Length: 90
Image (cartoon, rainbow, N blue to C red):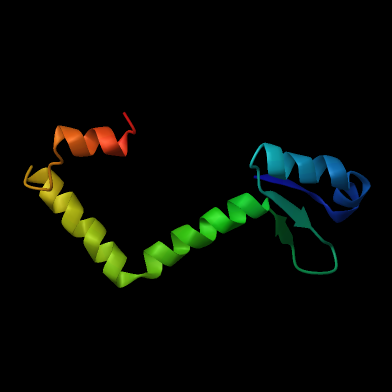
């Protein structure tokens, strides 16, 4: 994570905003007289919110755990070739 002072951030706001958006790099802004803050792109923030939602959802996490177990036992759902073609749009 890139870290810089609020003064440096303010002086180069556009370039740091572009870096957060285009390079998906979070930027920590340090303030002498207050709490630090983080700049991230909206796309990255939304992705992280979705991930947090899944991790907090016990039902979804149980489904993931069950899926891992069936995968390890090779006993999970096995789609037909037709279903695989439909999924892959062939």
